[in-house]
Image (tube, rainbow, N blue to C red; front, side, top):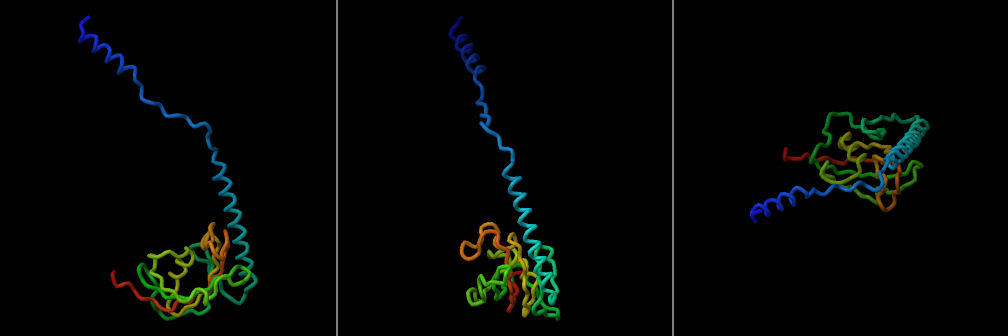
Length: 182
C-alpha cells in the first residue's frame, strides 16, 4: 500500500467513526405537578376573593356596583354626566386615591399618597388602577374593589400591602392633559 492510500484509509476510518455528541437525558422528569398545584391555589384564591366582593356588594345596598370587563367592581361616588374626555395613551392624569383592605381599614390614605401625575400606559402602576383610570373623567370619584390579581398580586407592594391582598381604592381624577403627540 502506498503512503497516500494509507493516509486516505486512516482519514476515512477516523471520520466515519466520529459521532456527534448525544444530548444527555434528564435524570428525573417533572410531572407538571407544581403548575397544577399553583393553578388550583389560584382558582381557590379567586373564588374566595370573589365571594368577599359579593358579600361587600350584598351588604352595601345603597350603591350601584358595576362589574368591569377587566375583573374588578366599582361604583361612582361622583359621576360626571356631561360628555368629556377619558384618558388614553400618553395623557397625563392627575389623581388622588386611597387604599383600604376589604374590612375598610386604611392602608394608604390620601395624605400618604398625595395627588400624583401619571402618564397613561407609560409608567408603572398596578393593573387595576391603570384600567380603572381609563373609565374615569375629570371631576369623577370612583370606588374600586380590586381582587389581589388586579391589585398588588402575589408580591404585595413590599411595604404595607401583603401577599394576595384584595383592596378597595377610592380614586378622584382631578385633571387630564391630553397627549399632543398624536
